[in-house]
Length: 159
Ligand SMILES: Cc1cc(-c2ccco2)c2oc(N)nc2c1
Image 1 (cartoon, rainbow, N blue to C red):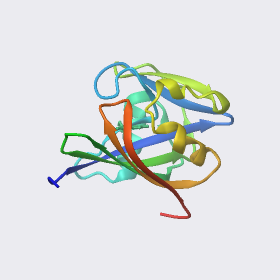
Image 2: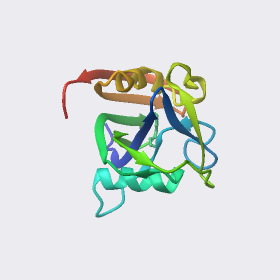
Image 3: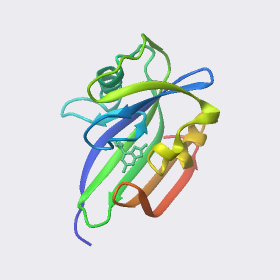
């Protein structure tokens, strides 16, 4: 099997009561999908620092109470050599109002009514785990950006 190039990303869930803040990706990778806030981890920054930076860059929200690791995902793509190593966090507390940026249009969604049909196809499998306070590890092998060819997903007790 050809070797894969592993790159690190973060995704951070921001929850307030029964609502979750998602961003509609207006351009670039994942365009047209609602997603949590996140992106590439830069050289010299920790996963947590990257998560907090991406939330601020993409939504204007300031995470004040730190983030908690809630999941680890690996994404691979048929015919491609990249492996996306995605560390999923939940914000402990935050301040500020979300603002639209060139990349993202933020919107609050009720937990019972997330727009899964307009999100990545893996999301409906692991969002419920986070929302009930659980943790998970998963791997999804994609054909393009909308079809999952194979998957593994397990709940874990701790990271
Ligand atoms: C293949 C894939 C990629 C991402 C992604 C983009 C940026 C960081 O992660 C996903 O995010 C979600 N929720 N599912 C995803 C599937």
